[in-house]
Image 1 (cartoon, rainbow, N blue to C red):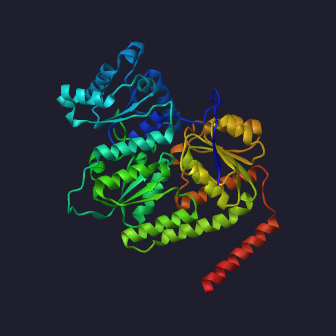
Image 2: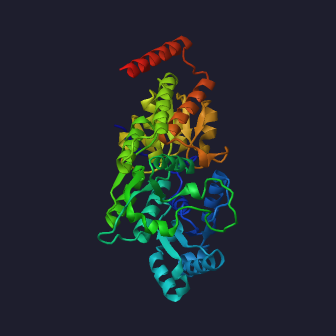
Image 3: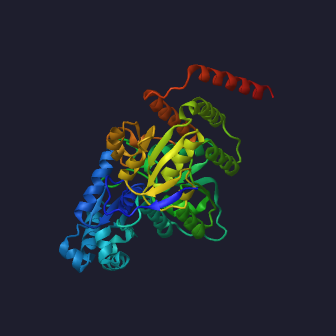
Length: 457
């Protein structure tokens, strides 16, 4: 059990945290033909836009209500109205996702009332869904904004299921947390499809921010889940939620439609993926495909090969709560020690992290505790700390602006976990942490002997 400590510093130094509106906007980007809209100043939107462009290396749709000093004092109704009308006429989206920011939350703008007034004045907007999420950036963090947005999409856009309506037995809903990349979502979809299951993903970043070249230019999101698909989520047989942050959205979907859900707090590692595969087999009524069995065997072999490189290593992690939980559990299962753990916001998982303490703080706090560590795991803003401490850095999370392929980084499933083991073990090897060759040879002999015994049995 870890002790959770919230630090009370006068200012944040080298921030780890990203704001709620950023997480909210990213969730909206997983919806087809959507235009995310920040209700706030132009600077707030520019910050988020630059962050996403540098991370994904893609054109990012993001607009602003452009609140100035006068509008902030007097109220932002006219700014919201003008922004919605301009977006509707120029970009022609199916949905406009509105996220609040700190300045408009301090003023107390009632955006839900604004939307009612705007709809009353402009019936031509009836064809466009307007979804507002309260995401003040002076509280909570990135994954909170994502979670609130997915919950609001469920509450506002999913159709209730009529009594006696038939469910689709081979269709499941997938609610991924903010810590899953487009590559992670693709991996989970591949796993579900191997069982003959169709997956509706909300939000589906694998369709919009996976780096593909579109056939035609569009000023809104390039892909993702459609409004029609969101409306029909209640006809699925089951919901799979990934990350503690998605519990509220899964519960809201179950309450609205009666679709049962299973929540996985992580899908990196052997045990949680075994549970996922068992669930898929139960839902589909099919045996586990041979290729999935083979992937599991490859992961087990990778764990056996890799644990000599992980044993006794001290790791420092700075990440959002669900990603921190995922990485810490995976690393300790391979024999590593979590010597420093820093996160951004509260979560019921934090007390269960295998560390003495978990700090809700910044990268300065992580650096102060990572001096004796063998590896630092955080996003690209941790690179200076890793250089000063002279320890390797594994970049993970958002933003990752100094490396290519951030959207395709995959750490879920049997294959994703296997590849993560190899990547981290190779970092240890490159930095002079290679085990004794004789010990490794003996280990492989025992491994093969054990496998032969199992096969013979």
